[in-house]
Length: 305
Image (cartoon, rainbow, N blue to C red; front, side, top):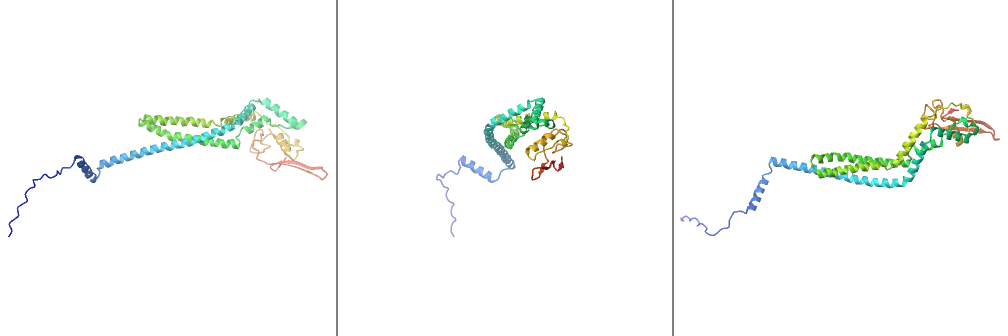
């Protein structure tokens, strides 16, 4: 038998304090709270924050893309201006020519046509009507050349691109206004005005060509509407040489004749202006070895004339 041990005597020495510093205690409490997971309200708030941040990033990204596209279009605009500068003299010269032709009266055009017929056909001039030289020029000036058409297509593409940027920026201006963001409203609004001015300037790059085409087209319409149908007798057209001069002789003879009776193309009524010749013109002459003519004639798309 052993007597029970007595309990150990209490320690009387100074032991270190178990109390944690305030900062450490707060950190532990925060960690414990985090371990327990966020509350429903905290999760909703975080989701709203992420959604808002995503929208802001998307908004900024969209505006940046618009800015980048705008800079690309500015480069194309500068190239168009440089190219237009190379054509300026030619475009102005042709514009002046169109205006000169458009300023001629119907009487002046008729006089030049009669003078040309006398020069070509002498005593038989009354059987023909030659197209006035000014009208011939207006026909060429009323349409764009292939090079001008290509340039116009490029201008149209840049204008369309700038117009698309304007439409893309409008919602951003409205959002900035709704958010009462004065700085953003001023910046985006200023850019919108700048793009509008640039689009207008781009459209004017080849304005000389557009003016020429419009002036020449209106002058041609005025001239053609003032002409009356000429009465002709096809049997009077004889001795047509099988060459280009013979082809011109046929056109001069049938010009302003009734297109419903003597059709050379899509024009089916009114005075014949040969605006769209769709039929072939064949001229044939046959001679003997001695040079004696045994056949002479012409045909339009197979119809004997």
